[in-house]
View (cartoon, helix red, strand yellow):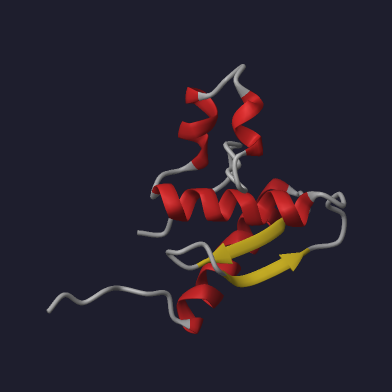
Length: 101
C-alpha cells in the first residue's frame, strides 16, 4: 500500500508564518492562499492593503501550483503573450504560486 504526505494544520501554520515574514521583509501587503494537493482551500488570509481581486488571484495561483506541482513562474514564462490560458478553469500562470512538495 502507498502512503501519501498531506499538509497538517501545523504545516499550514508554519507556511503562513513564513509567508508573513517574507511579506514583512518585502514591506508589502499580501493575500495568502494555501491549498491541498487537489486544489482545495486550506487557508486564506487577505492582509490590509491588497486589491479586491487578490483573493481570487492568490487562490488561483495556489491551485495552479498544487495541480501542476511546479511554480507558477514556470507557467508564466512558458505562456508569455498567450494569456488566453487565464480563462481555463482557474489556471493562473502568474508568478507567486509555489508548490509544497
